[in-house]
Each structure stands twice: as structure tokens, then as C-alpha cells.
Length: 424
Image (cartoon, rainbow, N blue to C red; front, side, top):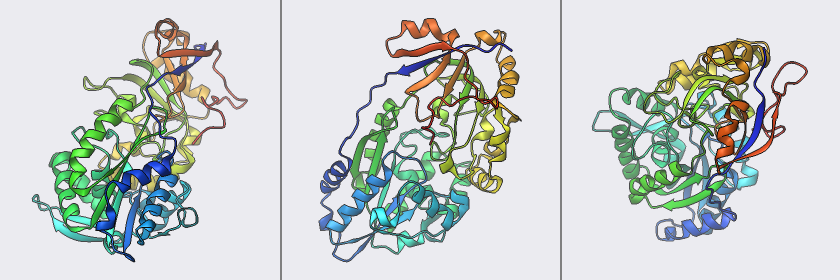
């Protein structure tokens, strides 16, 4: 088979960035005047989630430092639903892999899957809350705000979801995802959050937004009474700042890596255009990708291949690296069992491409519309096939770095990654 030649291009995004992150965290938290609420010697739980948030260890340490300045004791709580295999040890390992260690942060990590039921929602749903966090005097909810991979609304993934799923642990995540099949996402998330805000000692929120280059673009400290209003505002910013694929219609999208540190769905459905259907774009999606080939899992995902089932193709090494137990627990808890499926897979990337390209339409393989990306977070530098050349040359937001060149394979017949030595 004759493969398309590839261009290396750079996308230009609007990308505000915070350079002095500790100073920004301190300045934001100082606006809340927490000294009026926190007494010396009290404990303050601080959430740490499973997403690969840029600078998350530095941000978390800065929050801890502010708590210490109040003469209080910070405590780190892994808050991630069923991730880490739904075990306390697994969840601790995830945040430590992000650099959130007791040595660096200067605070104790208390990881547990035990919850307390603090209330029932108007729909009759028990409200679960992490027991270790509940035992602390106060809780700071820290997390990234961005569009959710499966739901649409004024709030999607952020502080509310952290209170719902993250601090609800495995028990809460299971019941809430079941409830969302009978009620709207907004109904459940508001009902649970209202109970948590009233009964669980929420002191503040720290909302994080990343720019299109996976850098920290905004940090906002939020008072509990402003959680909903502020998260609505911040989500609009997060949506505007998200990176995008360079083209609306793609025949074959090759993704070097997926993982829970990249997106809750392994690969962000807001990016790939499969938010409403696993294997085809709908009229609600902006991007239309006919076929997806996933080449690998990130090391930080620890074998959790949730989302791999949305791809049509993968390779043998990826299929064999899947931890089926962890993946199935997470996918089923999230109400998306098909996300755990293993796609058609072949021994080498060459074999995958040989089988994938003929399924993308009438274009001959060398004229196929192919895009290769590192993952759905890092889209600043990507590879695109020569079929896109005229469009690339006509746009000011795209710059050709090199090419067109032949597709680059190693001696085993596997593609070279878009960003060599820079995988997650």
C-alpha cells in the first residue's frame, strides 16, 4: 500500500498563561479572607483528582502553603470516583505519580474508599462523601474546569463534579451515574452539590483552566456560595480556550496515546467529535472523524484503557497493555460499558493502517485525509497528510514546520510518535 505523505504543522491558539503559579494561588485564596473561618489547629482537606492537570503538584502545594499560613493543617484527599481500580492504594499511587507526594506537598495524604452518607437528594438518592474529608474541619475543592466528555449544560466538569464523583468515591460514583440515566446531569449534580455545600464543611474552591497548549491559564478561588455562578463563568472561558483538531473532517485520526490523565474518556470527545455516539459524529458534533486508531496508553493511566472502545483500531501492544479489571470497573461505574471494548487490532502499526485506510471512503490511500496527534490535550504540533496541503497554505492559524515526508516507521513497523521523547 502507498501511504500518504505527511506534513508537520503547528497550530496557533489564543493562549493566556500564568507564569508564577504559587503567587497566583496565594493571591486568589487571599481574596476569600479564610482567616475569618479557619481556626488555628483545624484540619483542611484538599482534593487531588486523577486528571493530568498541568502544574497540579505546584498548585496543590501552594494551596497547602496557604492553609499553613492560617495556622491550620492541610490534608490531601485523593478524589476520583472509581479510578485506581477503586482502591485506596491505587488512588494514592495516581496522585503520587503526578508529584503530589507527602514529601513535596508537606502534607499528609489520607486515601480511603470509605464514605459517609450525609443526606438524600429530593430524588431520594443517598449523598456519599469521602469519610476522611468529612472528618476534617474544612474542605477545599480543587480541580480543572472544562467541558464534560458526555454531558452538556451550564456546568459540566469541574468543582461540582469533584464534589459529586470525586468526593463521592466509588460508592457515590456508581449511584450518581445510575441516577443520571433517569434524571438530567444538571438535576443530579445540583442536588448533590447543594447537600455537600450545606453539610460537608466546604471552605472554598480552586478552579483551574488550561489553555490550548496544556498550560495553566487561569486559577480562580471561589467562595462556597458562589460555586455555581462562578463555575458557569469559568466553563465558558475553558470552552473558548480548548484546543481543536486542525480540520473538521478527517478520514483516519491516529492518536499516539490515550489515558485517564488525558481525559475522563481517555480521549476527549469534545475534540474527536464523538460526544454523543461512540463511532460516528452526530449533527451536534463539530468534528467528523471516520476512523480512529489508538497507538498506546499513557504510563500514568496504569492500564486503565477506558475510552479505547470508541476507537475502531488499535495495535496488539496496546490491547495487551490493558488492565481489564481496572478498565471495566471504571467504564461500568461511569455508565459507559462500551468504552472498555477492545477494537480490531493487529501486530504492527503498518498492518493497522493497511486495514484502516480502505474503510475511510473512496479516496486512494495516498490521498487519504489522515491526522496524527500525540493525544487530545496536546494539539499544538501535529502531523497531517498531503491531502490537506492547500487548506494549510490558505490559513493563517496553521504553519508548516516540515514536509511533506513519507510516514515514519521504526524497524518493527510501528509509527514514530508525533513528539518523540515527550510522551506522557
